[in-house]
Length: 294
Image (cartoon, rainbow, N blue to C red; front, top):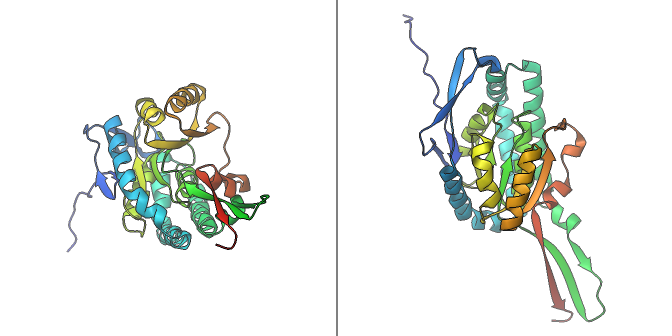
């Protein structure tokens, strides 16, 4: 016998250090169906703080050494498996894009499909990029001289508002494939896909702490991203004033920046939005001398 019942409303949480957490401040901000401020309430999203970001840095630091020691082949397998999982739950993710944004189902399905392809693309580079960006250097002497890429460590990712899933995955996958760990601030206007992605990461083979997803406002978190000395690089899609703030903070804390202009219309679907040089942006190079015959 059917009974009338209220649906169980989802309580979104962010994914940090392999666990689901609310903001330490307890603050949230609402999102609405169809992206309308006066529309039907959809969910309360955690409004993460600077303390949440610092906690995420600690989680990344703990996960970093093990992830960097993994073989490139293993990292590629894990990224490929994540692509499999996203493909299997494509309908759920497309719904997570459509309901709070009002975008069409066709566009959402396309975004999920290209996101899967992007994960598979970077999975394929995992055991190949070192041969492309590294080098054997000619020297005048009885030595071999090798230049090899190594991960930088913790990288901050600040996402654009548009294409909230594809942009997020494009920026994350190109960073973690080389052995880095990531703290990502999701789209400010469309954060919900990052919540669902966190749920997928939790059941994937990716170790907890390798990818940490935060939601909230750039104006509150960006200064800490810029100045935290344990964050070694930042990949960000930001406006002019935010670029200045990041540049000044990064200069003081000596970190690498890759800045894209949010006022430009980024095409995450283009072939130019992926490539081995996106991996190269967040690796360091180590040169080794080895005597011949030893």
